Image (cartoon, rainbow, N blue to C red; front, side, top):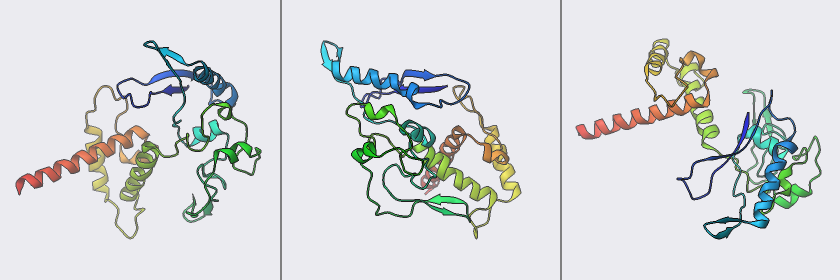
Amino acid sequence: MWPILMQLHNMPNVPVMVVGIFCGTSKPSDVEPFLRPLVEELNRLHDNKMTLNGKKISVSVRVIIADSPARAFIKQVCYYNGVNGCLKCKCCETSLKTPKKVIFEDTKAPPRTDKEFRDENPSFTGHRRGKTPLTDLKRFDMIKCIATSDLLHLIQLGIVFKLLLGWVEGAFAPFKKWCKEDVIETSEKLISILLPSEIHRKFRSLNYLHFWKATEFVLFMTVYILLVTFIFCFMYTKR
């Protein structure tokens, strides 16, 4: 299932609401039936407004938050690891063989604009690969209104994962990696942590680090921060 969720800006006490849910045997292959009903309803609410406590309120989208594959899908653009994969500027990627990765080195590339995006003809070699209903959404900037930075993928699945790989597998040469006993001891302590019943996922051994889900990295970072804070407070109080 691919859900479309909504949260009201500047109203943190209002829970996240379900707008729509796509259900199928695989991820949606066509963006048109996935987003067209949403775009039409948002445009209708924008034009006709909605009545709340006797007041007419116009509705518009402030920002869309999605992970990298979903962003490329809803915008119908080149994937993040493609030559023209940057969503914010026109820099071109550089492919490295050792280590195998894609990097964007140009820090002075001209930014992408909403008008240029809409005027660009979809192609298999450019940034825009196809048509998307989002271009019909009123008061919506195709560049500024789609966030590209989120805590989950940049920090938990990015930095925390890299740190653990360095400590466990020795990716931080010339710095030494954890010895086998340290990995076993850390794994045993993680597995023994009793998490609240609301969290359905439990810690797994560091031997399965490559198969960890985002929840495990979030929990690990939380435990790590709490542990460092406790040690710091303990040392401070002893002084």
